[in-house]
Image (cartoon, rainbow, N blue to C red):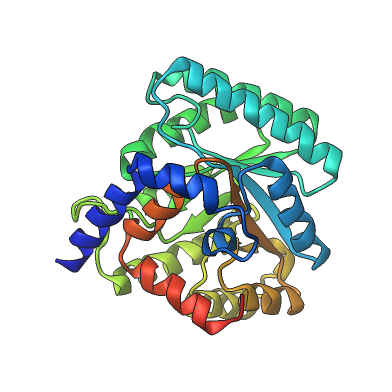
Length: 312
């Protein structure tokens, strides 16, 4: 009951034009603001500053220009131009050459051909600069078309890209088998969207078990997988499995979100594990931030616990 109410509440807040305008005016102005803890800022300059700081500590980064579910060809084209410009800015700044993009931001809701053309433009620019691009996974409604689009481009020679698999989707074991067979780099996450019971596992214990099963497949058969989690139990399971099977640390990496469990990020890096931080930025930070809290009620408590666990 609470879960549905929380999701509806945060969804409503995310859609509020008034709150968005107020947040856009004040929410990113102060460095110590709550939003700035989890979103680097509104501009590429903000994101580059955050990336430099993280990389000085020996931790890698990936940048994500916020925005999704665009509904016009013009907006999708604008997002594509933004990403091409971001590639150039990152190259000039000398920060890590790693990007994350969403197909719904590049126009897949307009039509698939539009998103394919736009993704090719981003991948072409990225390839010229030696970048790797991760195609993010969105809700289950996008899962099939995301993987189909990715595989189409992979098969015509775009090899500077990887995808994301969500352990809570019931289809994910088959998807890992399919994508692993191509030799693609997979980012494994638990999944945070509110999905139907017939589409996704509902119990945390089931999601965790699926995550561990897929992690084992990726560590033994995958191509430099990214284990993306803040859950200490999942991290410990990954480390234990790797040690028991003589899998070297440089064969995989841990990934986490900007601003969450920075203590854990630092500890893993100090232990010699490759760690990469996902840095979101852009003017669409408010809907992103509110939806992230509302996608799963547990996220609200998790963010609060994260703030209490370590100083800002």
